[in-house]
Length: 245
Image 1 (cartoon, helix red, strand yellow):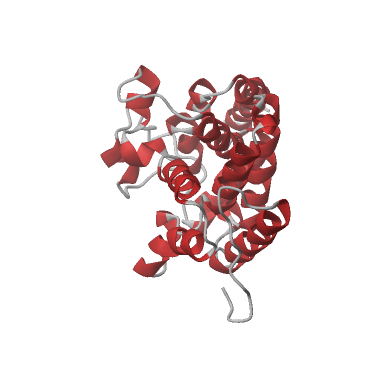
Image 2: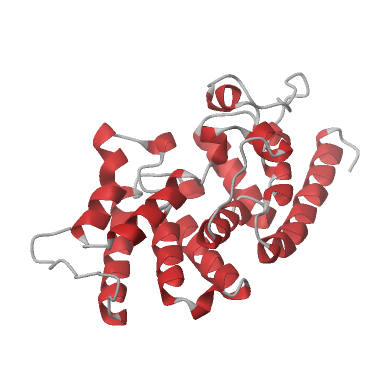
C-alpha cells in the first residue's frame, strides 16, 4: 500500500464504501503481485474467479449475508497472491496476511479469508486421491465451497483448455507424447514433484477430475457443461494427433 493511501477501518460493521475501497486496493495488489505471471495465472484469471464466486454465492443463497459476500469477494481476489508456483521471494508468502492486517480486517473475517485461501488447492494438502475418496474431507463453510468451485471452474471448459496449454508452454512441456502415461493415482508428493510430463496428461491427472469435486450444486451445474467441452476437445485432439481427422 502506498504512503498516501489511508487504511480503511474494516470492522465487523464496516460500511459498504469502506469495503469497496478495500476491494480496490486488493485489485491493485493482484495487478502488482501477479504482473509477471503467464496468462494462465494472471489478473484476468482472478477477475473471472471473483465474478464466478459471487455468482455462485448468489445462487447458493449467500447474498442475504453481507459478511459472507465480503469474505467470498476478498478470498477470491487474493487466492493466487503469493502462489507457490510463481514465488519470486519468500516474503511474498505473507502478502495476503499483511494486506488484511493493514486494511484493518476484523479478526473473524481475516481468519475465514486466510482459511479459504490456504485450503483452496487441496492437492497441496492431501492430494486428489484423498479428496476423491473422501479421506480427510471435513465440514467446510459455504464461502469456501463457492470460492474453491469458482477457481476450479476456471480450470476447466474452454477457458481451462486455454489456460492449460498456456501454462504448459510457459514450462516448456510437450503437447503430447503417447509414451508418457498420465499419473492417475496422484498423491501430494507426486503432484508437487517436478518430473517430465505432457500438457495433455494434465487433463487426465487433474482437470477431468474437478467436476466430481465440486462442493456446491451451482458449481456442479456449470462444471458438467465445461467437463463435456474438455471431453469433446480431447476426442478431437487424439483423432487429429493420430491423423484420423
